[in-house]
Amino acid sequence: MATTKEIKKTKYLNPYLGGVLLGLVLLTANFISGRGLGASGAIKSVVATSIQTVDKNAVKTMPFMAEYSQAHGANPMKSWLVFEMLGVLVGGFLSGAIAGRLKLKVEHSPKISSRRRLVFALAGGVLFGFGSQLGRGCTSGAALSGMAVLSLGGFITMMGIFGTAYMLAYFFRRNWI
Amino acid sequence: MGPLAPNGIISENTNMFLAFFIGIAFGWVLESSGFSSSRKLAGVFYGYDTVVLKVFFTGAITAMLGLLFMGLFGWIDLEVIYVNPTFLTSAIIGGVVMGAGFIMGGFCPGTSFCGAAIGKIDAMVFIGGLFLGVYGFAFTYKWWEKLYMANYLGEPKVSKSLGLSDGLFGFLLIVVALGMFWAAEWAEKRFPREEY
Image 1 (tube, one colour):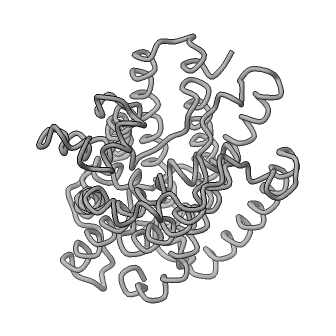
Image 2 (image 1 turned 60 degrees about the horizontal axis):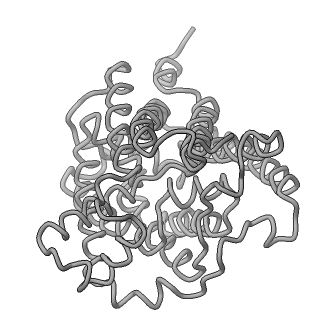
């Protein structure tokens, strides 16, 4: 007899199958575009565009913008990662829609309030956004894609992210368990 | 033959167009694996749900093996593939800051977009935080520039740094991953929790 737990478990893809599919997507990106997947770079493009719109001379006055335009050319929004992340929104939505997971809600442990969850989500986002710029990419672009091409930096960043999260897990346990 | 865009087989515009479809597949796989849920993601740090570890490492290994084989068969020119540069200091410190953000926020940038796509308000707030963090870095860049550029090592491969061939390193990584998967399965039995 199938228990509730077993039924619930089938909601998601088998993680190893999901991993193989993720690897094939990453492989396809490398084969077609010669680069890996990413996420934080798209945010950087939006940020760079907004700064450029407000201040046309930003490229000359802000070293961050100079560094950015050197790497990405004149129009930051015409970027591979921006198109890819728009696709992520569509793909995530489609998958959630088909599985019946579309629902506007704040997900949090029953032991904490929505407010506490949102405060920590905001703080975590700020840190992740900042760290992804310093580390030249996030879990997708630096860690996952970097590991696939055997980049030393990719492995180091991966260990930095997961190692730190494990070390700090004890202090934030109330939020999750 | 490959990679197609850098070798001029498809145009830059076609490449951007295909990026959108690659993104759809990426978002689809992340969401259907459960990466739109912060409680599932954070589970890996407490042992009750190790989907992150399994999907992440299986994905990295699949792509790595695929690239090594495609390179071996001459289907793809690995010299043209983008390899992330290594700036030792910022790779470590950036990783540490991101790790703190991960355990506090429960998402990483890619997964937060998946969560937001299916209506998770905590994911949307996390994305708001991401923007603040990136703006923060952009406007204070001059304070970090030295750190950001420190200890540039070029684009070294981890295999070469360890004095191993790519194939042997790949094999060892698979062995390590299998060990971690075994530990992950054990942990999920040891710390059972209902799925979210």
